[in-house]
Length: 349
Image 1: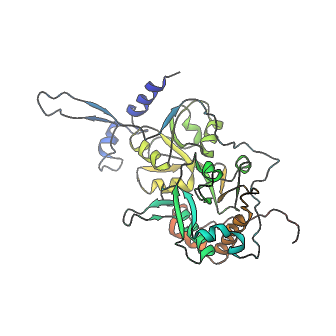
Image 2 (image 1 turned 180 degrees about the horizontal axis):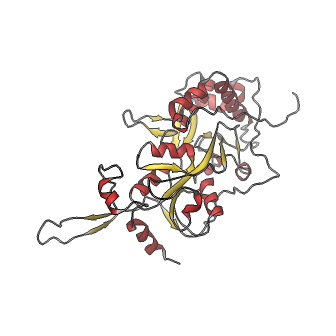
Image 3 (image 1 turned 180 degrees about the vertical axis):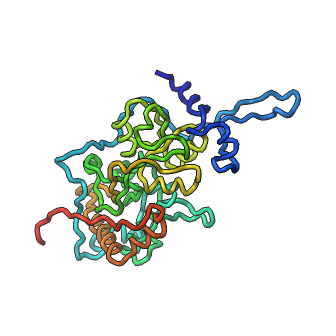
């Protein structure tokens, strides 16, 4: 077993992700190469020694060679169908979500560093992306104004806690609907279906998830992608970070060999670095849902679930969802269409 300190150092200074020294110097296409984790300074000046600088790991990163506790369960549960949700009804927003209406804004938890889903536009500084557009559509149906929404930044690891503590009304953060998560929160019907894939440096030789055995892999803490990685492989080093943007930095600094998560997130990462590519077949499906706190006597959230599902019905029917896909996710190919909803059987009212 490698000790924590040595392991971090090894992550920071080990070689490029499957790219040889010549390729690093000139780039795969003969152009400028990628930065390496070792920087030598002062070599042209007399009396100044050479210094080998170690790139720091992302803030809050954790390196491990053993499966951590607390990861979401992803093993198939044949007794559970996690996808059905409450059917929209004919009630008004005032009847469904009176407290949110009185407050005057919808509070939404999301990521601020997930390119294409929710990120800050460098030109305007405004949050934008597929998940942001969805949040604004929900606010439009509640208030008649898509701007009446407050965004709060969450990590993958603390999004459920934020719902349980009533810090946000909903979480829209590429959150997969699972049976285990349904034990503690509830979900809308799926608004998108992604598939787990692998991202690696071009020419690395990594072409499928089995090739990650014995490699260094970046995942976001608390995700189903991390759980499935540990289920599939026995021998690997995992760098768990707070955001997928941290994974991009880690692979660019040669601290990891690959990233694994949903294809929709990976296409946003590849859009920021042409040296990276998505490889291998589609793995398990990851249906994304809007996360909502479980209904309790003191906090009846059933109306909010119906309100969100009503919006999802509308954007499916009026073409808004396809427009959102075309704007943000067309890099994945033609629109697959919004997942068909399934609803919980209910007695007629």
